[in-house]
Amino acid sequence: MNEFPDWDEVFTSAALDPTHWLDALRQLAEATGSSSGQLLGLGPLRANPFNLVSNFSPENISRSLTCGADKPEENFRIAAANAQIARGQYDQVLHEADYDAAVPHLRTRGYVDFCAEVDIPFGCQTNLVVDEHGLIGLAILRSQREGRSTREQRRVFAHASQAARRAVRLQERLENQQAKMLAGAFEAMTITAFVLNSQGKVTALTSGAEELVREGAIRLSGGQVDAAAQPLSLSQCIAALVAPNGIANVRCRIERPNGLPPLFFEGFRLPHYPWQFGQPPHAVLLSRKRSGDRAGISGLLSALYGLTTTEATIALRLLNGHSRTDIAASRGVSTDTLRGQIKTLLAKTDCANEAALMRLLAAITD
Image (cartoon, rainbow, N blue to C red):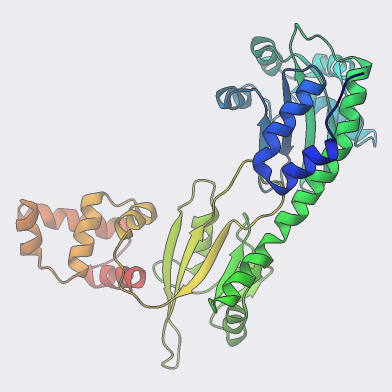
């Protein structure tokens, strides 16, 4: 009799330490005599789509997307799942017979041909989660040599999928609590902080942040935080952090009325991993003290305004009080050339003159 792993142990270990998911999928593939195990999350509202496949190259995962792997009208696996969901069946084990029924209705054969090329035409699958965000599915992928899945292999897969479903739900719930845990850590350090999800909405905040909202220095409505600030408004800073190809770090200054000192904030994009299923924190916005820190400012100016390294250096030297004559001499260019470079960087930063540029730079470097 075949000895199979304790699936609860295998998948719960992965939920508690997500770096183990690929190994869990490998064990599932081996137990069913298959080439690969797959776990994927997709859907228009899923914050972090993912596609984990054991024994499968990242290059082929990327290639699959160009062949319609993420489109139900081109991927027979998604098409088969959607057909079952339309019938009110959310967690059936689907297999090759369901794929055969779906293929004739596909818009193109791009994904079918891709599967033939990389030798994963067969397998079976089930949904682990189907909710308002989309779905999380589990599958095994089989080669021509391995053949179509057998009833016994599908029985093993179905048994393992029950443990995988529990593990995925556990991990989602743990990740959804990370924002509160992070806010608690900042609270303990008396740091004013807003914790943001991938849509830029506030999912947790510290008491210091709550006080700023109460006093009206910062607006918070429907999870969206905003305030007039330089060089970007608070909402623009957040948008820059959470954009798909956004920047990793941003700074801003918020002026306050009635002689109150300005507020200084710095935003950080947090690391994202392909095995995150829930709504883990995506970025944080932290209050900071005036520091005059110039390190990293050139890169930030390039990210925000598209300044070249030369233009960013010129801007910072102007901020430090260097004259145009000194800057031109140190760079070995004429004052006319420097004047043209300053004109270009003023246009890029949407500053009418050097005084406006100094105010913008001060908001970032103070």
